[in-house]
Length: 343
Image (cartoon, rainbow, N blue to C red; front, side, top):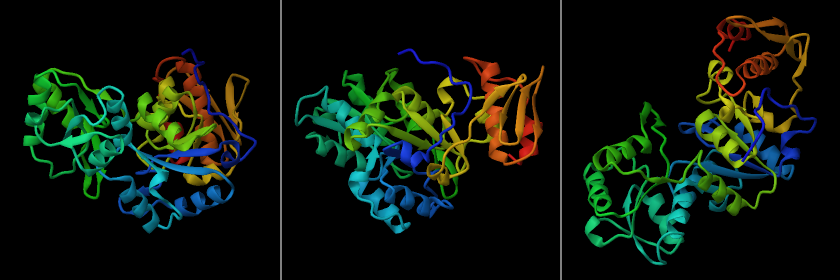
């Protein structure tokens, strides 16, 4: 599919919650961090929903079931939230498997309860051993207590020619104590041992986007996330618009250096960005203007002049960086300009 290269964040005269019918929301870093809701998330989501926008919570974590995720969101004050509002990579990979094996087939599970529930939903039978004659192997995040022997079971089956599927390949996962190994790290263990390659369903790949559209019926979705390499790239692969919020892992320097598939349609501080329009970035006089700021690309760094809202300065800098980079990554130093914005 051919698409033009994004060279600047877009503007919107409408609130995003009015311009799009469904928000496909990442969770960790967007809605909550650890066990607590991110500032302004609960009120912003309630206002968007009351205005008619459907909210769908999309997660690459295959461990928790949709019921468990919905209960957590409800505890945070995001009401009403039901299991039907949650889409997981376990559901996406279960559909992918069901399209390639017979109804009722046995599937060797290397992971947690979320995978087992999703497989049963698609009429498949979870099993625990390579000796159970599985038609497929599926691997998803199983939590820190997943026994090492589970990887051996996967290897035994894959070595016999059984097809291998993975819910997602995120190398890390946030925890209350810091960054921990994610399902992608576990997938690498099996890959190294077998030399095989799994079929992957989760963000940023198309099966996950297809699952969200099938389950929500969205006609004009907006992906909302904090990660360039999963949320924003997933929107790019699905050819839909995206909003990057700066409440998670992405910082200003990473955003300025983003290649085309990691450039969001809109940029805002947090989920309040769903409730308002987005300012235009205008080109002129060799630079890019947004609000009271003008950004230009120098020989070795990005320059910023003016004053005003920090986010407007960041949007202008994105336009200067992305235009200069074209289909690549911007190599110009943006550190001084970002420091001026407090970013």
